[in-house]
Image (cartoon, rainbow over all chains, first blue to last red; front, side):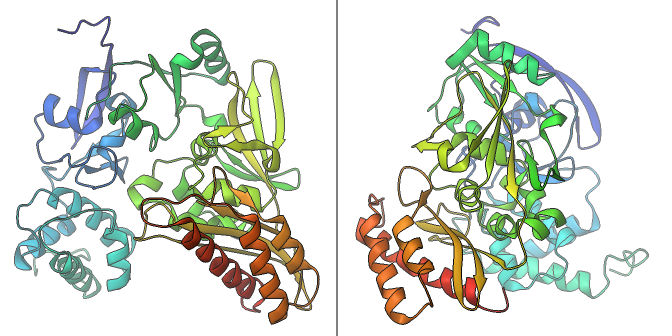
Length: 174
Length: 287
């Protein structure tokens, strides 16, 4: 059994999906273990736990990061968004719908990370073509689908965006 | 896997880091962007007693033209370099190399200082800084010193930085009118470690190269210059015979070790291919 002496604790204050939380966490604990174990948010997954697979992708201060390569302690004072945000943006909702429509998941383990990476792409690279989608998403591994359906889903949301679906006032029509 | 236990301190000033370095020595690790350190902690390849987070030290951040060179603070993130107009204008080599570094989520946190301090021979920034003849700025409680890139990379994960020093910045010469840059690497998938890579800069006049600096990555225990091949390539017009001579010189001076997927001979072949492509790109009018 570990004691605070051999397993140091630090206090953090972090905004998670819009709520500000104050928690005592082990210094060694990474962000996704904090989200899953201390916040009860099981949406962010751990595949490889050394930054290769992308299943842990979340946003910190609006930028996607590998949740397994950030200490919870580093998130002190920062803003975290996960796939289970209570107020999903129209783009995130459209991606979720497109993943279902295109069968872009089988087991679903990689899906939260895929969605967070794809959301960043849709927001930052609205003109991305299929090849650029493949390159952007290459940081996220899927062992079921062979990626074609995932790329199809992301491209379809980019098409919807270029057709004006997400401009203000168009949400109702969609 | 989960990291072993350690204590964590968020440093409040460079002086604070120097005091901690003096007190804890090798039992502590400096955390910059954490994109390598966190992976090694999670895999239990590293087990420090203390991790000191320098992420709040804003004096180590930022990109500026200063005293005739481009100064990039150690905590500057890969993505900031990738998108910087100053970098694109004054040191385009770095803008060319940045997209090759891992993936967006990692470039959002990883820092140039962390990469240069860690000195992985497969990393992009060490080769770029070596190709440009940059200068590393090292700070300690005793003050500041500058080390040329040629003298900084000493071996596998080994640099001229002393245990009591913090890498504060890198300074790069500004590109001049007839200077050209080129970066390319060969990897099995985008974002993987390169099997071979090359950062190159040269001045080009009348189809002849001068001031050529080639810096290969993933071909040895550190980023490597190729002085014999450089000398051949600068000796006159780039005829087929000269390119063949440079090719032979390069193969003679490189001594790569094999990795899991590529023999030493294959790596030499890839290096030679990269060099030919670099020469073509450096001398083409459009670059």
